[in-house]
Length: 505
Ligand SMILES: Nc1nc2c(c(=O)[nH]1)N[C@H]1C(S)=C(S)[C@@H](COP(=O)(O)O)O[C@H]1N2
Ligand SMILES: [Mo]
Image 1 (cartoon, protein in one colour):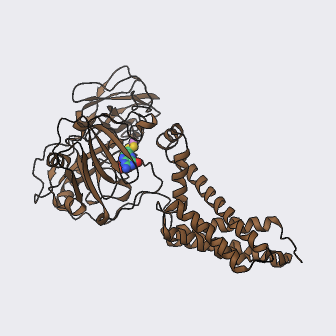
Image 2: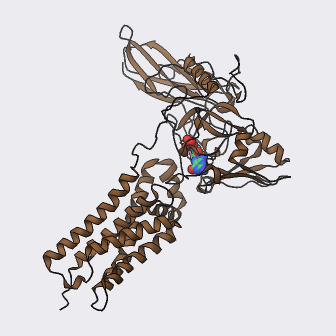
Image 3: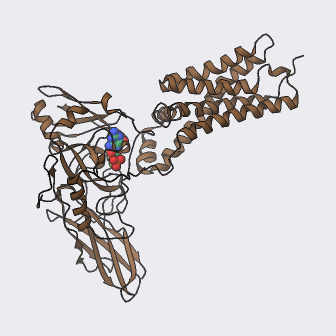
């Protein structure tokens, strides 16, 4: 007799197979681009209109990305469930065997995952996990009794939980995102430069130190490229006399230098925190461009392993650095390992990570973000931020405000503070600039390495106050230009205006 199993049972087993496939793919490849969830995220991202990407990723920050990722996981579970359902239905026919059902439950998810991720391990992980769930859920579903059916559904769900659990155990997801390096810095030059930075820093609670502890991230992709340096190369192409192709070894063999450089994202709010500074080690782009033989070309396009591309005037790259170390450690994966570009004084988006190609162009072109409406390939706007406010100091009426100021290669001449809402202005204390660039070959850091040419400063201002008041700050750059007063949101070309905060002593 062919007693139809309740539809809900089949649905639960199919959904369990879907969840197991997502878990099995994760178990096989971890959080990478080959993971089914990430591949579907990328596919969904390609379908989402550009305007939504603009707001969702760079403007709304991580939240939009998380929402899309959860949707991608749900889609993954659903599409595999459909494939598994076909197997379960096949198994319910009296002329079909258990083996055929399990095979069908394996084949569908495997092929699906293979097409979506182009990864055999990922596809095998997904397929095997889905097939196991269907096997645990039992074939010949038509011949089940209620109690036995429930047990099978439970077994199927258990198998799915096991697949997901095994993945999580093998690759524990990091909820904080940033894994901070803890090993001590070995390089004596780097040590000395970082020590000098620490000596010059103002201790300001709630503000980043002079050299950032937690460097911000902006990424178009959900999973960062995971590039083995041996399999990576950088090409210099386009309007050049000789095209170049450098292996990682070639890069390491070239003369390197250490430089303090600040990055700021064009989407950074006027008093936001998408601005940070590190000590980078790498090779000057100028040497490479000279070797390739560039002429009076207008522009350059940087291309990266994650599909990112950005184009800007070639002149902006002339004094650039191709960095492979950050604060004395290998460049972290999330900051572009094995190699990233640092473009002096220009918005963060020009600083291509996971760099694979430098193409010299004869015509201007749009980059990834410019295709989505941003205009963030030019020089940074000048900004002074208020990230630290202390009250009740000294005799109780002491107030200290402070933060960072940045004006790209124009440098900061001074920061002016008003503690009466903009009526009157005083000049704040400013840190000594960070040290200038140092050749990595030298044994030690020279006594006077000059000053950094593209780095922020710290400022602070102390005064007495007992009543509520408004603190306003503005930076003046090295050309004498005052930070623009007109308020402008970050989209499309960077926030402007003066930062103003209310202080209640
Ligand atoms: N390949 C690649 N490079 C990239 C990006 C990216 O998504 N992919 N984001 C850009 C943007 S918008 C910024 S602000 C900086 C951020 O660098 P960080 O993540 O190291 O802070 O990298 C830029 N370079
Ligand atoms: Mo950015």
